[in-house]
Image 1 (cartoon, helix red, strand yellow):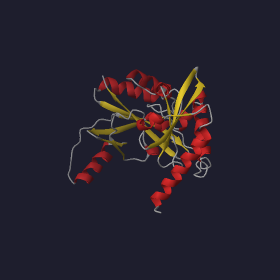
Image 2 (cartoon, helix red, strand yellow; image 1 turned 45 degrees about the vertical axis):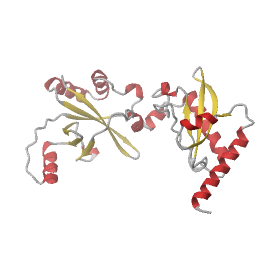
Image 3 (spheres, helix red, strand yellow; image 1 turned 45 degrees about the horizontal axis):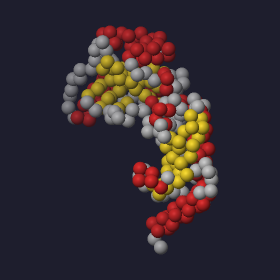
Image 4 (cartoon, helix red, strand yellow; image 1 turned 180 degrees about the vertical axis):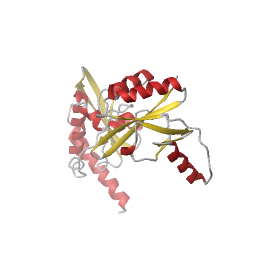
Length: 270
C-alpha cells in the first residue's frame, strides 16, 4: 500500500467515524448536494447556532486530507459580520486555528466539535481585543487591491516622524532622507540619478493596535485618527495636504512582543 493509499484510508475512516457520531444527532444534517460547492470536499455537515438575535446556518466542510487538516467553517450570510466580529472573513468563512491538542488525527470527532464550539463562541461575541491581536490581518482586508512592493531602508525603530517616500508604479521606497533613497537606487542601477522627490511621508506611533471602527476610509478619517494620536503629526499632515497635491504615505508603527508592525495609508493632497 502506497503512502497516498494510507492517507486516503485514514481519511475514509475519519469521515466514517464522524458520520456514525453525527447521523443520530438531530442538531446536525449531512448535505450531500452541497459537496460540489466546496473544493476538495468529501462531506458537508449543517448545524444552526442561535446568536446575535439570529439562528445562523453553519456549514462544516470536511476536506480530503481530514483529519490532518482542519475542516472549513462557513456561516451563511456571515459576510455581514465581517469586521464586526473577529475571525470572520469577507466570504463568511471562519479563521479558526485549533491548538495542538485539538488537532489529533486519532480523534476526528473531537476536532469537529472543537470547531463547532469555537464557532458558537465567535458568533456569541468574542472579546474585541481579538481584533487587536490579529491587527495586521484585519488591516490588510482589501484583497482586491494589489499591494505594491515596499522597501524600508532604515530600521523601523529609527524612522523619524517626517520621512521620504519614493513612489513609482509598483514600488514604494521609504527612508528618513532623500540621500539614502538616491544612493540605494544608484547602487542597484549602477547609474548616477537625480530623483524628484518630496518629503511626503509621516511615521506615526500607535499606542495600541486599532479596532476596525478606527480604520481610516477617507481623508477626513485619516486626519481625525492622526489628530487623536499625535498633535505634531497632525500639523505636518495638514501642511502636506495643503502644500502638495501629490500622493503621500503615512506609516503607522506599533511595537509588539515579536517586533514592529508597520502599516501604511496612501493619501492625496488637495
